[in-house]
Length: 321
Image (cartoon, rainbow, N blue to C red; front, side):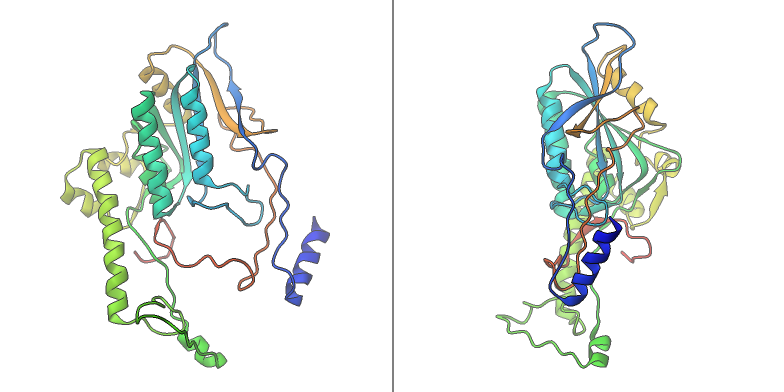
């Protein structure tokens, strides 16, 4: 591994290489059921499925050092489809550990979860872990009941689009931007120059629209008055205890509590606890996360595919909303 990284860095510096990807054999394969806790009685066919959402919510294959290389939106849908097609799965525990992500990806996953509940009538209990903020909280709103740990970081109801003005640096380096464009706003957000008032108004209008969408989802799903939601939705984060007091979540508890609630909502006394992982995955208990994987991707700025600016339901510590 060390030799491979040294070789990759060396090739990057020559300008003739933009990354190396080591993909585990199970990435890209179908998800398979993995039992994480057996039922307490024999011949019990009922199941409660744990579905994980971890990391950034993006409609793209994730890349980076030791990422799993999967598309979070696609993987989420795949797991929901497996749970929907199994009549023995009576309820879902959605375990979220995410700071959020792209606006569209968050909304797609939220709609998928709502459709799952409506079409299958299977209860969905959300369990927030370390972080379920912004797009992670948006997704949680699709569940029937939301549990948060006392120390969960949640909230961050808002939208951000991170743009940078590097014109001073460009000037220092003697670099200028001279785009050929079809209209005055075609290079909106160009970091080589300050943003014009017209450009800022355009982008601010779009941010406001996505923000209003988020607020309306909170109003509808949490049954809170709009003025209260807007007072809470200034981008700040809350602990799980604060969120419960403010009505943003239902209960303070742990994963076992969320599983117990799922059993109650499905009118079950007992059930096998399962999860859906790629082939070769193994979990030893309900607290096991997605099995460890190796996917090394070294992207060199300017040589790989550009990521571009994006509207995000994302908690970025230190960023202004």
